[in-house]
Amino acid sequence: MSNGNSGNPAVVGLGGFGLTTLMLQFHNVGWAGTGPVVWLGLVFGGVAQMIAGFQEKSTGNNFGYCAFTAYGAFWISLALIFLGNNFKVFEASQTDIGWFMVAWTLFSLILWVGSLRISKAMAFTFTTLIIGFVLLDLSKFGYPELHVVAGYELMTCAFGAWYMMAAAILNPLYGRTLLPLGKPVIGD
View 1 (cartoon, rainbow, N blue to C red):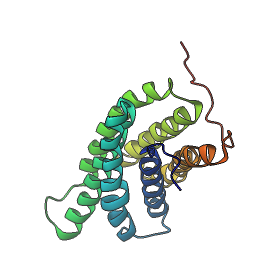
View 2 (spheres, helix red, strand yellow):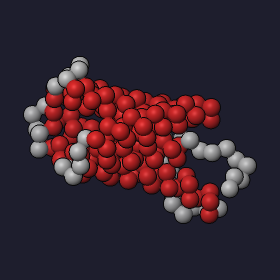
View 3 (tube, rainbow, N blue to C red):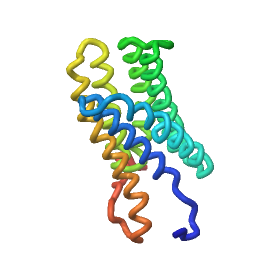
View 4 (tube, helix red, strand yellow):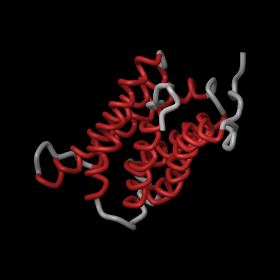
């Protein structure tokens, strides 16, 4: 099935990010428990996404290298927070988790600025990620009703990641642009 080109590690990174984000939102809106979130967070969102990030380094893509490796670490960390709280080892309070989320919001703002120079699809995905993080931040610091709102909003972020994954898989397979990503929001 190979066409002689190297595989694109972004398809695994985007797939892992999208699937794990979606599963966490199913939990956040009350449709699923934490079990699938923990295991996906450790394996697909965590380890597989980190491997994709390390592979992005060899392509010279610093954005992908940073994003996939960092969010892989995010998912592993979040899964370990869930496990720690469950087994009462290094427990994290809701405020602790809130500050964890605030730190990731700030980190994500840097990547959001970079996303504006990549494509409209990437900018959409990072914009919805930032909005979701801010809603989660607020939900941990006095506005718990925003937790479910964040869940629904972050589902759109997950679908944005999957859209880019689908474009990276389907466009080359069909030899044309089935799923356009759009020009960068901020051009030269």
